[in-house]
Length: 166
Image (tube, rainbow, N blue to C red):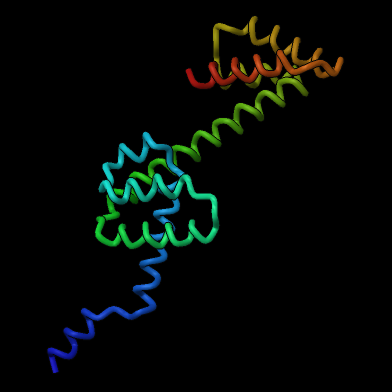
C-alpha cells in the first residue's frame, strides 16, 4: 500500500509533461530573440547554442515549429533555473529602459507644448544647463510653429535624457 502511494507521487501525467515541454519551447523562443552576445553570456551547451543560431536564420513557419520543438527537446537536459533568472533580469531591464524613454518623451512633449512647465522640470531635475535648456525649448517651439524638421526637438530629447540620467 505504501509503495503505491510513493509510485503515484513519482509519476507525472502526460498533460503535465506536455505543459513542461511547452514552457521549455517558449523559453527557447525567447532565447532566439536574444542577441549573440547575450547568448554567449548564458554559457549554453554547444548543441543548444547552435540550434538557437539556426532558428534565428530560419524563415519558413513549418521549419521554425520543428526547430522550436528541437530546442525544447535539447532544453530538457539543461537546468533552466539560472536561465530564467537571467531572462527575468533582462526583461526587467528592458521594461525600465522603455519606461525611461517614455518619461523623457513625455517631458519633451510637455516642454514644447507648455514652455512654462520648465520650472516644474527644473525643480524635479536641477541642472546647470538651464540656459541651454531654455534655448533648445525655444527652438523646438519655433520649429513646431513654423512646421520645420524637428532638429531642436531631437536636441531637446537628448538634453532631457542627459539631465534626467545625472
